[in-house]
Image (cartoon, rainbow, N blue to C red; front, side, top):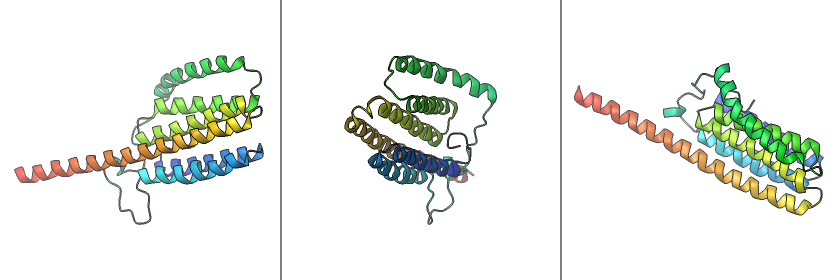
Length: 204
């Protein structure tokens, strides 16, 4: 839902729900610290940056520029979706073959991680809206974290925790940078539109 809902505010809300479900997954597996960090970094802070990119705040006015409509205006077609699915499937097949020889990796974590990476790659290739690509980036990161914990979590839990915590911090910083860039592009677009309108009025 976070990757496919074209209403952008609702898609960000779905991502927060997704992050909370990931935290509950870590908790059910006995990784309490990862669950708490996922709630803090993945749901709370990442969600805040995503909503900041859309200028969703109680005191915010009507959005302008490329955020003037909180709905992705680019139409999605089955043909375009299938064509852009092929590269994601190719990458997913290569990852699957690479992990096939690692018999120690738990099946559910490996399968879940591969599924999330595949969905994220497909959504990143399919969508043009920058915020939707930012959502896909975060979903890909979660898939990588699941695979990392599947590979080293049971044998070396401390190393697995360290890798996932580092990944969460990198993903949070990437999301923050992406959100700020989206807001900056929107501000530049609004300024350009106002400048063009002023020039037209001056010419008239």
